[in-house]
Image (cartoon, rainbow, N blue to C red; front, side, top):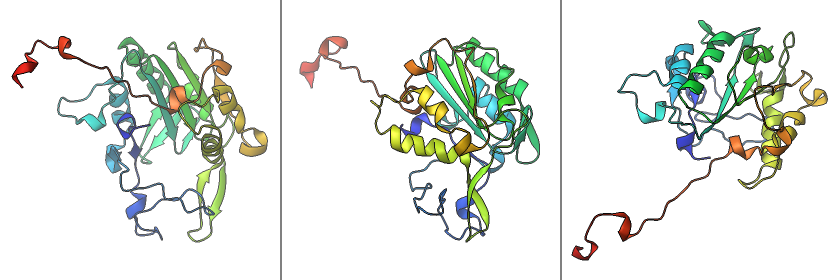
Amino acid sequence: MPDSNIILMLADNIPCNARNPSPAAIYNNAHSHQNLFLEDTEVDYRGYEVTAENLVRLLTSRQINSTPRNKRLLSNSQSNVLIYLTGHGGEGFLKFQDAEELTSQDLADAIETMWQQKRYNELMLIADTCQSESMYQLIYSPNVLATSSSLVGEDSLSHHNDRSIGVYIIDRYAYYMQQFLDEKVLALESNSSLENFVKYCDKSKCISTVGVRRDLYDKSLKEVRVTDFFGARRYAHPFNSNDFNFDWSTL
């Protein structure tokens, strides 16, 4: 997946945080030191730019003309769009900066606007918060598949902590989702299905119950490859001299 197809929002500047024992690095596994914050990692929205309003404006393309390209979702009616939400939340809301909330109604209306504006072909929503099933219960737009790390009334739990800093560094759902992608989706041609994906983190792994909503999505999950959303293919169109009104002999 090229970085140009990813819009990353990070509210906290963890790599530069004075309490980070590994400056300019982020690790999500205490037993494997694979730095997630590489030199070419581009954070498109950071700090106080990460707001519920900016997320809705990004999805619906209601941004000022001077907004740079990296802060825009340049999708169309042929695009498969993946939205991944994680953080602190509860029934019907996701918190932003401990100061405001994105409600499930806000999200549902933003996705409907995207559909009306022909900004996606198919859309997959992944919500990884406590009671995250509630974030997609009000969605009413077609061609939307949604999954969550927990049902309403359940907490979404952490996986393990790093004793050197004394905090949990990854949630169970995110841990096993990454494990599935690392082991089962090794190339763009992988045949791993979305059904395999949503069933991978069962109760024995996640402890909470993974939720799935598929009534707005016509296809069987067995028939949809994970790479339809977690991959991107570049298309090239060959041109020849007949495609241009130009005298090539003058060159």
